[in-house]
Image 1 (cartoon, rainbow over the protein chains, first blue to last red):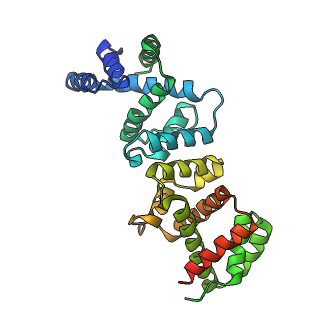
Image 2 (tube, chains in turn cyan, blue):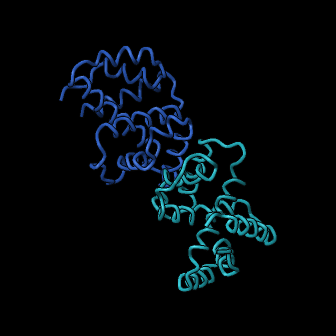
Length: 144
Length: 143
């Protein structure tokens, strides 16, 4: 199934911190069976954001420091993000390892990490649309 | 418990100075259970002192998380050897009522060992400073 406009709108609202709109749209997707497509879109956006941030030359040290910084400065409680899971998730997006065993934890970590990655990029509204369009294209090309 | 011995202090000193040949030689001489126990007590006291100096007064949870992150980022070996959540808990346990009873002894000692080395490196102690630090740790261990 192809990514829908509502799924893109939900991700956009989430990334610009429009909590009310994001909750409304995600609630709608929950009810209409659109959450799987939203997860695929979210995962694709995460993959792209990680690669823009760290690739092509990256080090484990960079990933470790980045996760520590997120936990130290972007969360009310650092324990809301498991550091080892977060590091594995980022490294997997960079082609190092796999996270097949981390379902709910994947989603939770991505929900925290993706906004931080995007905020670091400080995209203007047009650049944000490019980011969303790229994620949409990647999600649409994923095997079913 | 027996008081900390000069050999135990010398062993920890060699480790913290990075004199690994001397450290290996001395640690082999800790050949009794009592000697090794005394060494562990000294290590715990030194860890307590170093953490207290660094974090107890003005340190925040964010500082602890960042410190552990920086230590683990120093090398892949350190990143693999140190569980970040355990390390953070061990540090916080020094100045809060954080309960660490569920962490096994070997992990506690191994993690304290590595964190202590990093804390001492960050303090950039000269010889006299290191001696003073170890004397304070010894006094605490002997209490």
